Amino acid sequence: MNTWPLELKEIRKTFKDGEKMVDVLHSLSFKAERGKLTAVLGPSGSGKSTFLSIAGALLSPDEGEMLVNGHDIASLSDKQKSEVRLHSIGYIFQSSNLVPYLKVIEQLKLPAELAGKWNGDTKRRAEELLKSVGLENRADHYSYQLSGGEKQRVAIARAFMNDADIILADEPTASLDSGRSIDIIKLISKIVKEKQKAAVMVTHDETILHLCDNIYEMNDGRLEKRK
Image (cartoon, rainbow, N blue to C red; front, side):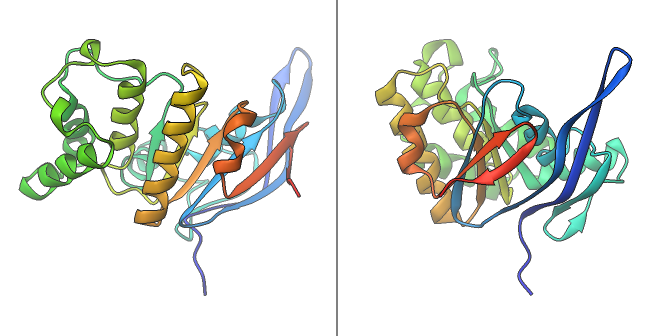
C-alpha cells in the first residue's frame, strides 16, 4: 500500500473571534506526492497559513488526522512534534531566515547538528547541496555578503539538509523579482524531482504556477484542485 509523505484527512480547525467560534478549515483532505511540487493559492484569510501550519506540525487540528509517512501525529506532544519537524519536514520561508552570524556552510550545519547528525558524511552532503544550488564557492561567506536570490538558494539547500521527505515553502518568491522567482522555483522543482521529495508551496505568485505539478485553491477553508 502506498504511503504518502504527507496526508491530511478531514481536518477541521476553529478559532475564537470574540464570542464566536469561526471555522477556518472545513473537513479538509490533502495528499502530497513524492517528486512533485504543489502550489496552494488563495486570498488573505482563506486558511492558507493555518493549512501550512498544520501540515508543518506547528498547529494541531481540532478534528481529523495528520499523517507523516503513514503515522498520525495529531495527538503527539509538542516535544514529539518538534522531533517530527526536525527529521521529516524542511522549511523554506518568505525571507530566507538565515542566521546572520553564521557562514553559508554553517547555515546547513545547524539543522544537522540539532538532529545529532553532523559528521563527515553530512558535511559532504552540505557541500553537495551547496553545489546543487550553485553556491559551492560561497560556503565561507556570511549572509550579508549574499544577494537576495543567493540567500533563498541557501535556504533551499538548508531545507533539504536533513533529508526530510516533506518540504514546505511559505511565499518563497515574495521578496524576489520575477526573473529570480522563476529561477528559485525551477531549482526547488529540480531538487524535489531528483530526491523524490514532496513539496507544498503557499503562494500568491501566478507567474510561477506553470512550474508546479499540482495547483490547489483555498477558499473559505476549503481546498480544491484547479482543473
